[in-house]
Structure formats: structure tokens, C-alpha cells
Image (cartoon, rainbow, N blue to C red; front, side):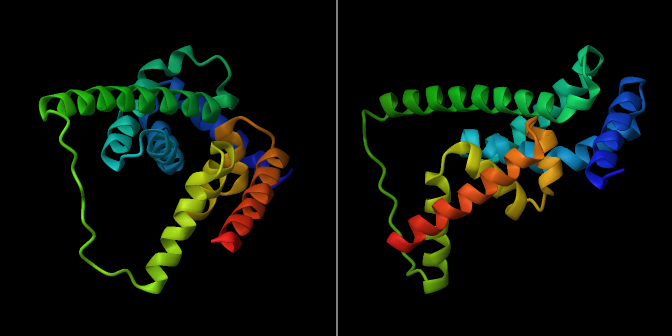
Length: 185
């Protein structure tokens, strides 16, 4: 049996155990999927604080709603949908708050000054970060989960609810686009 299939089966077993009330099984699922949920929440909200809050809410909702999950083998994709929804909810709330703040401040603009010179390495990192942010979300998410969260491609596929070959293709395209963008800069 292929290793990726064992992992999917293992996740399914944990989901079934958690559905039966095993909190340790749910804790293991949280440990496995937390980096992915946090990454999705951050990419939607653009704020680590909001992403942390959305991640907590995602797992609370998942725990409460676990009995309604019809396909335990699709836990990752189900969790992904919850995470996106919670992050969007937080983003909308924050945007409304920021707009209200702007009105209260009579449209005064805030200008942040960069008081420190950036080193060459930092500039290159920021260039890469900008290039990564410019990627379409489906590519950006795969790169972020794999390289910044050390998530195996197979688990990314399970989380996104797509075949492994799709994740590999997205990774390939993302690298090509990043190389292209970095060479132009």
C-alpha cells in the first residue's frame, strides 16, 4: 500500500475516532492541520492576529460540527472550507472597522516611515515575498504550505481536496512563475 494512502487512511481513522468522542484523536488532527489552517487564514485575512483567531474558531467549529461530517476521508477539504469562511468573516469585520476608523480620523492618512536600511538579503526575501503574493492563490497556497509550513504534498492534496497530481502541477507552475517574476525584478 502506498504511503500517501496510509496517511489518508490514518487521518480517516482519527476523524472517525474523534467523531466517536476521542478528544486525543481530534488533538492529533489539530496538530496535523493547524499549520495549513493558519496559512489559509493568513492568506485570506493578511493579518497573523486575525489568522490565529480564525484558526482557533475553525477548530472549535470543526469539533462541534464533526458529527455532521458525511465523508470522514474528506476531513481536510471540509476543514479548509471552514478556515476560509472564518478568515473571510474576520477580514470583513476588520475592513468595516478600518473604514469606520478612517471616517473618525477625518480621512487622515498614516504614513509609515522605514527608518532602517534593509540588507541585501532582506531585500531579496521581500522581493520573493512580493512575487509570492502576486501568484494566484491556488499556487501561492501550495508553495506556502510546502515550504513555510513543511507540509508534505500528499497532506496538502488531502487538505485541499484535490488529487496529488494537481498539487504537484500547481507547485511546478508556481516555481516557474516565481522564477519568471524574480528574473524580471
